[in-house]
Image (cartoon, rainbow, N blue to C red; front, side, top):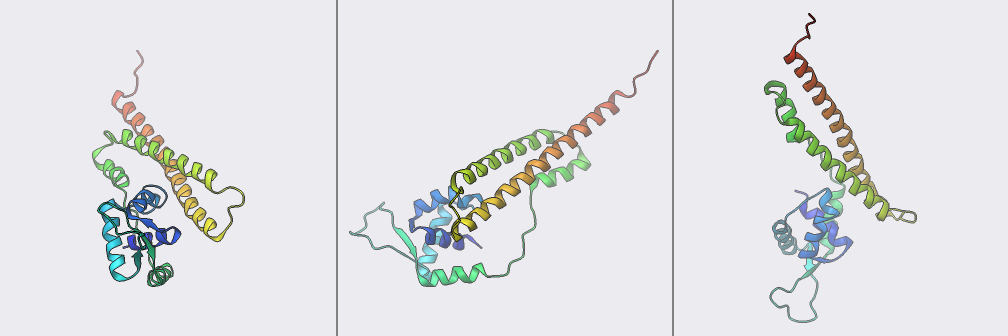
Length: 193
């Protein structure tokens, strides 16, 4: 599972509390690796127990509800570096919409057009958000190694969303054409007197 590595990466970028990590997962990290609040806290406890991270020293005795900030220890950095170089096969696509389209071939497209339009709107919105992030965060002068690699990840998101928008537009056109063909078949050829 990649969640511990996502957490180690986030903590190396900036020591954070569990709550701050959750907020960061809701933003940038969450675009390509999501996790719930509970998953993050469970993983933080495991990483701390394994010696990969530690809670930063508090200036005073911690009180209930006070957030602990964590930092990565050398063992955690080494573990993350080993994972970066690890060989891993790509994961196959598992998308329910693709399966629905396949099923529509045998049971009909009733209601599918609306779902395709909904997915298209979602992907268009995500693409617009990624492009806004790119414009805001990756302008001139953002050419450090870290900036270039983060931009590369964002470009993957932009390219994937661009693919889905184009593919869904084609799927919508195909479904519209199928509906027109079916409507023509139901009405039959017009007869002239």
